[in-house]
Amino acid sequence: MHAFAAALFVFAIIAQQALAQEGRNTRPITKPLVFASQAEKDAYDEKTKPTGDGKIAGKTPPLNNAGRSMVKIRAHIIGGNRASRGELPWIVGLVLNSASFCGGSLITQGAVLTAAHCAKKVKKFTVYIGMQNYGSKTETGRVVMTATRRVVHKGFSKAMLENDIAIIKLPKKVTIGQYINTVKLPTYSDVTNKFVGTKATIAGWGLTSDTSGISKELNVLTDREVITNSECAQTYGEIANSMLCISGSDEKAICSGDSGGPLTYMDSTGANVQIGIVSFSHPSSCIGYPQVFTRVSSYLKFISVNTGLRIKN
Image (cartoon, rainbow, N blue to C red; front, side, top):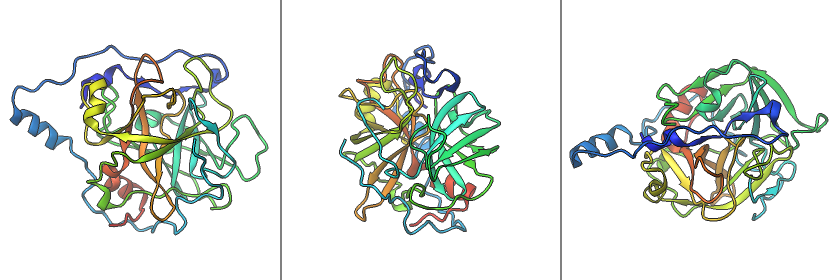
């Protein structure tokens, strides 16, 4: 995949140091991929094309109200606003091995979608569902459970952050309610949709500046524009078809602790659809550069097979 990704900033952070200032985990910068011929590049593109075109019929139909919240998302995490309780009921907080923090999304009543780099080698996940205030111990309607089963994509490359997707299986189903709901997923017809120009929403408990600690409050940032992979590659050297980027041209961005969280947009029915999973950004700063996500529509087969969720055509 894109060799430059070896230099990029992985967003999981140490929860035990969550309220203190933290350093970054970066890797040595390497050169972008160079192809000896157009045929070699075509072969590479074929190998790395989206993998979600194989239609697998799951056993569990999606919820009719998936992707809907009790509170309207505002037009405006760095540079974001504090989320209202119930505004993003599919957002999940994950503490990994009692040490690191990531985000995730509830995609069925028994499964959470997150990044592979958040789940690899993790033996215990403390899963916070229906949470707004990470610092509170008395939130009404919040569910906390311990999960130990996860499925990490077999093609995940830690060095390149390729196939950065994983599923955490909950020990029991959660009940849908005012503060808890599943997010809607793309359909198979979206596999060829690049979503360029789409205005999307990101949210999480990550750093609110390059030098801050993890946020106690869930923050939300909307109107983030999806850009072309070729534009994104001008920064990172190579971006796979199975990745998706948003613009980083202003002072608003994802940051440490937001890894694994969802990138969503509102479809024509008013439902929020997850099109991305927070993967990585630039090593020098959270702001001012494009941010990269795992493209969910490239992994519909993986999701369906490992959750039983029936993906629509």
